[in-house]
Image (tube, rainbow, N blue to C red; front, side, top):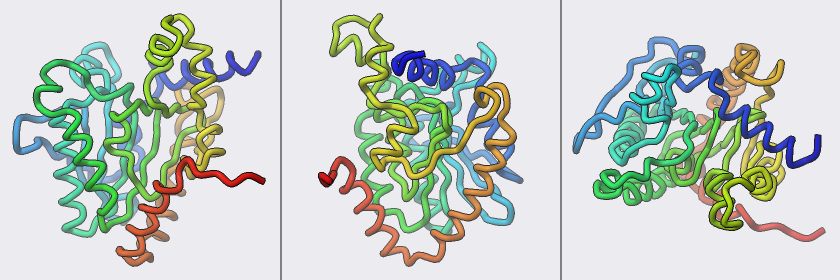
Length: 269
């Protein structure tokens, strides 16, 4: 299997119909989870499944993107594509977490923010931009985990965090390989080639120092075996949140700011 085929295989695994969704991961990680609803402006975006609970004995806020399992659920959750009210709901919970000094876990799994006319009319771009501006200054520990797909600003809208972790077969990119191929090559059928060029795998992003940790997958991917990977993730999250809690909030913000300023800067050796 050549490099192009290997990368495309990861794309297919990340999108696998039986890959566990955010709700499955939340159920594994969090006890006493209480989902919170609504953006207090328009309505409740079901795609952005968010709430509070406990990671072991640590009170925590969880903000996630849910794709759904069955066909009915996928339609209900809009195939994991949030509307602006989803990002506003996320923002409301971020501010609530900061008020009560709760760390936040973000679970990213979206092909991108919903690009429909109504979403644009209700301020999709501004909603995402407000989240970016707010997250960089939040005074609580933030960790994001890319579960499946991390697409464009739709993922970044809940992805400005102290640590970015990815599952081994997850992907994270500026847009889908099909969209990239349509723009760059004027041919969506060249998605495999685009995927390789985009460097969207966990290994690539770790090498670029964008991703801080890769969670291994077993037996061909999470769709075959997820409990072992979820267990390793849980142990890692507990440890990392405890370490981040020791850091002064002002220093935490400075380090977070530096992390994103340093992305894309490389020294020749």
